[in-house]
Amino acid sequence: MNKDLLEGALNANTGYNMKLVNGKVLISINYDGAGADVNVSVALSPEFFLDKLADAIPGKIDDAIFDYLKQHFLQKP
Image 1 (cartoon, rainbow, N blue to C red):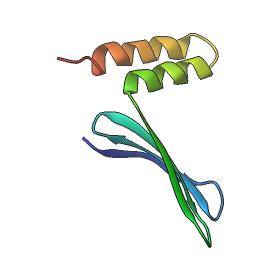
Image 2 (image 1 turned 120 degrees about the vertical axis):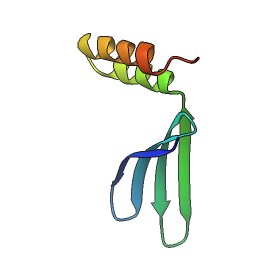
Image 3 (image 1 turned 120 degrees about the horizontal axis):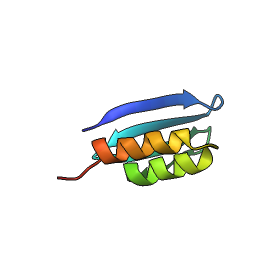
Image 4 (image 1 turned 90 degrees about the vertical axis):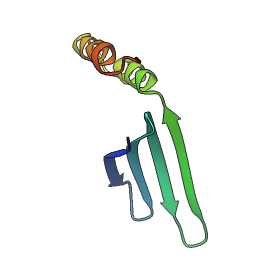
């Protein structure tokens, strides 16, 4: 399953996007300059992404929500 999650611009030449591609969270930064074009991306497992997001948000409520999501929606058969 592929799905666009987030897209935007940092400035006139630089953009970002987040997609769900083949079960991974794909985060990309794109630069379109006069003399060079650059694309840097990283593919993360959803579990790893949610763990890092939970670490970045203070408090425990988000941790409980992410744990619930991992248990009920990211279970492998």
